[in-house]
Length: 381
Ligand code: SF4
Image 1: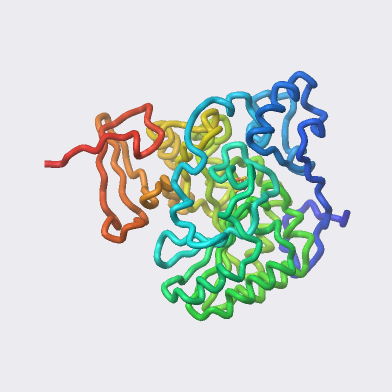
Image 2: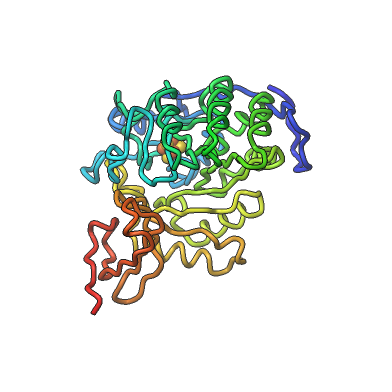
């Protein structure tokens, strides 16, 4: 393990700031803090929905608190076995053009390059990718790259999965080089939770740092869509990793869903927004959780999500309240813009069908609804 400085002074480039191999854990039997009874009760849940974490992330848990939010994020819960939701709640399969490539909005392609993450969030909307063989992810990125080359309307590529920072640095370098050679690709985004699960991935890999700097230049920029759900995930190591990525020319933003028992409290969400602004990854989207199978214990209804979101923003400055509260629906990204006594107001932020772009939808208020399909539209006279 390398030495790591506890201060927050600016880092130099390409330094090994604490390379340490985290130990990945795939069995509840390897979590000694759980009692034998708890493990016994949760084995069936972990068999249905994959369990994975690591020793760094487990170290953030306060085991004396049975409702600890970090514990809730990665340790299975018996209620996941309740019959609820669908495995692919927003029908991503319909956007899959070939294994490992989704194309929903004309200008954006998703490369699903890996089917593993630094840990498995219990509320994950892509948990189907970790459960069984599937054709939605491909480690062979060449067909996906060829698709992007032949579609000049694609100006930005989101590399996701799974978590692309689990790919080897050599593969990431190759991927970045190939994307950089496609003239119409102007922006490369990485959707990653590795700075929460394992910030050493960035801090300890000088070659990865060099690659980020090499491909973050004028005309083409790397964005890291980070994923902190709770302020406690933003450790001094995570902060340093954000700062390092920014110093190398990358842009960092944060996005997360509202998760029951984790951040569905206005004070917690406000602290997260503020911290993200301070650290240099301002909040970009807050998601209404998709009604995904196994996720009932983690979801909150739309009206409650809106209430938490809007109350969280109230005490913050403009810079910390730029996030949008959105639903990633099969038909597009729909922003929840307001709720009053009788109605819920929504607007297409991005529409799969361009004819619906910016369309406003007004629905009857339903405090029990979790998703657009459960809402009743109001005919406006
Ligand atoms: S990091 Fe993202 S893809 Fe991975 S388990 Fe968490 S929510 Fe799912």
